[in-house]
Image (cartoon, rainbow, N blue to C red):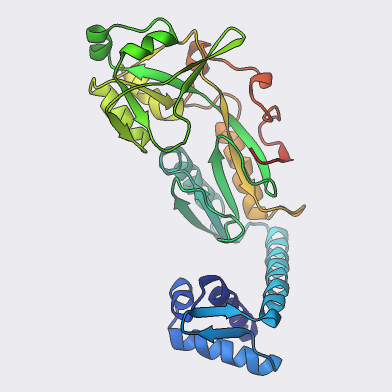
Length: 329
């Protein structure tokens, strides 16, 4: 399919802004990519790219050709998947973006199971806490926790995500166990820098109580904060999918359980469109099967403490696995 290879190379050059970067992303020699583009332009009888000392960009004709080519490639992929499913399996390449810690701890085993169930399925999992552009970076799906910001994407809620404040037994024995959120002000806190939200917000009955934690240790890694907390260096606010094992072993203890923290949700998001590729559908089905309901990392939702009802989950009252479009957060 040399024509399709030429088209894919052209799209890669436009998105990369240069032949060298496109060749690297495709795993090809730069000369091969250049030859493909020249052949494509000769066949079409028009110039698709503008080449300057600053880089490469698509001409007006090139932009039109790229848009139509992307639709053709998407329809080709749908046709392949339809045939593969009729043949009794899921095939193709699943490109997934997932959070670093949650992905390593909880998604990676599910992807391994998925690979065993579908031997013809290729999986490319990118683990990072950066906010990826699904459409621009050609991801089939992403796993996201918390607020959803891309109104054009389609989301499926998989499970609730709870958080808890923890400290080591040694630290709590030395510094005391806070009985109310206000008492956190007198403690060393381990601060998460991966979000713009700085306050710790608790629920006291129907009221919200905000506390501005203070501390000298900061990190964008939840695992790092957990290690520091277990070492007796302070209090940390962590999702239970990170803290549950340490709580179970006694390395840290949960506190302020009568003052629940906001509950978020775990989602799978995908590009817009009514058609759900088979590779994405089987991923969602397996995630719902493994994480739906009360996830295994959240046994009894901390023995019933911090339980949130659907009304406490703004915009997240769908059942696990139910698909919905969403608005910007």
